[in-house]
Length: 72
Image 1 (cartoon, rainbow, N blue to C red):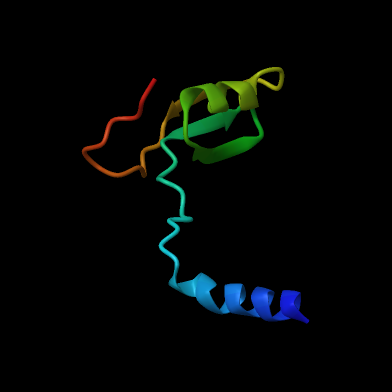
Image 2: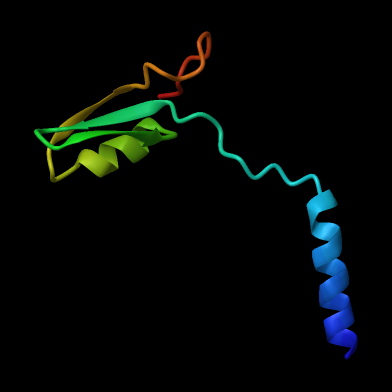
């Protein structure tokens, strides 16, 4: 019974925590050869790993926040 009360109390307090759960803007796009685009990469290395073996290129996301340069 104590566990149930403890869990209920934790769940009640959870919305008041200051955890920043949203991701930063995705700064890289993968342009797959003949298969489309994915602009959900946060680093150049992630993008390169996604196109590795299937073909494609990586470029900075044109929709990313203006004035912020992606890290290489």
